[in-house]
Length: 138
Image (cartoon, rainbow, N blue to C red):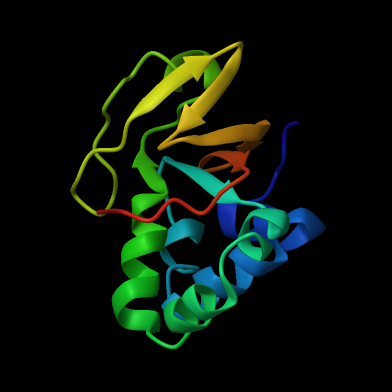
């Protein structure tokens, strides 16, 4: 899917990512993801956020400049990386500054153990891959 929007705009326009859009805005990363980039965002879908224990989600949202920002930055990679490329990277460095494991299992790309369910939403400043789990860095 190709969008003429930035990553921030494309996430906001897609109802599968309303919780990610809200989290990005609360953490102040909406400006970053509207910038030049390029970025690759492995964005948890709303279903992924709803699978989290409610107390974990509440704790993240209550600490927007701490834990929430840390988790969101872990979902952002530098560069424009479609699934054909990302699946070969193994341990790329995230915007958080630490690496994440990327593998492929039975044809599904896994980002830190989360499956890519909505691949390759191409934006003007990068690409979004929807994933089925919020990945919490160690």
